[in-house]
Image 1: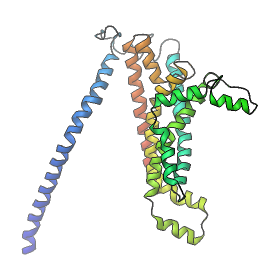
Image 2 (image 1 turned 90 degrees about the vertical axis):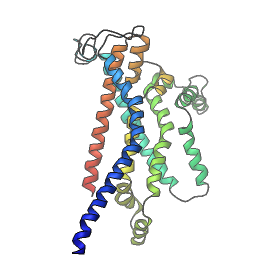
Image 3 (image 1 turned 180 degrees about the horizontal axis):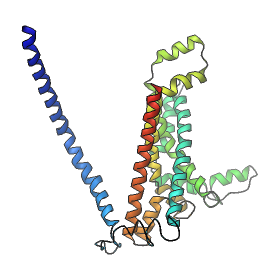
Image 4 (image 1 turned 120 degrees about the vertical axis):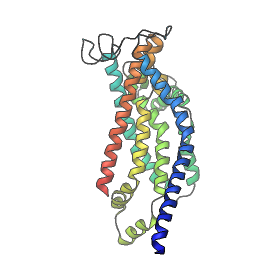
Length: 312
C-alpha cells in the first residue's frame, strides 16, 4: 500500500524536474537563438531577397525579377549556351577541386603530425607550439608571405632551387592552383592535427598495453584500434575543413587574384558584386554557394553516421 502511494508522488516529482530542466534549457538557449537569427538568418534572408531582384551596387532597392538571376540568359543556369554559365562552372570546378585536394592532403598530414605529437619525446611541448604557429598567422599575411617566398626572381624558394642547379619556377603563374593548395595545407594542417591529437589523448591506454603484450604489429594496432576510435573526431575535423575550403577566397585572391585558373565561388560572388556591380547575380551565386555547402555537409554527416553504425 505504501509503494502504491509513493509511485504517483515520485512520478509527479520527476515530471516537475523535467519541466524545470526544459525551462532552464530554453532560458540558456534563447540568447543564442536571438543572436543567431540576427547575425546569420537575417543576412541570409536579405541575400536571398536580393538574388530575386535586379539590384545594383548603386541601387540596392532593385525591382523583383523572379528567378532570372538563377535561370535564363542572364542567370547562372540554362543560359542558352549550356546548362550552366561557363564562368560560374569554372568557379564551381575550381572550388570543388581545391576543397577535395587540400582537405585530403591536410587530413593525411594532420594524422601523421598528431600521431607524432602523441608519443613521448624530449621537447614535445616546444614542437607542439612550433607546429601551431602557421595556424596563428592570419590567412592574408601567410598568403602574402608565401607570395614573396615563391616569387620567381627574388623568392627564397627559387633562390634555393637556383643554388641546387634547378631552373627558377613561376609557381603562382605556372602552377597557380597547386600554389594555393600548398599555402592552405601549410596553414590549416595544424588545426586538424590539434583536433585529432585531442581525440588521441582520450583513447584508453589499456587497449594498447594488451596489444603490446600480445605482440600485435603497430600498423595493425593503428588500423584496428586507433583509427576506428578516433573516427568521430576525424569526421568533425574533416567537416570543419570542408566547410572552410568550400568558401575559400582570401588565400586565392592574395596569391593569384581573380584568374580563371583559380577563381572560386566566393571570388565569383565578389567579382559580380564589386567589379560588375551586379548585386542580384552575386547574391544568387552566394545563395547557390550556401546550398552547395549545406548539401556537402549533410551528405558527409550522413555517410559518417552510416559508417559509424556499421562499425558498432
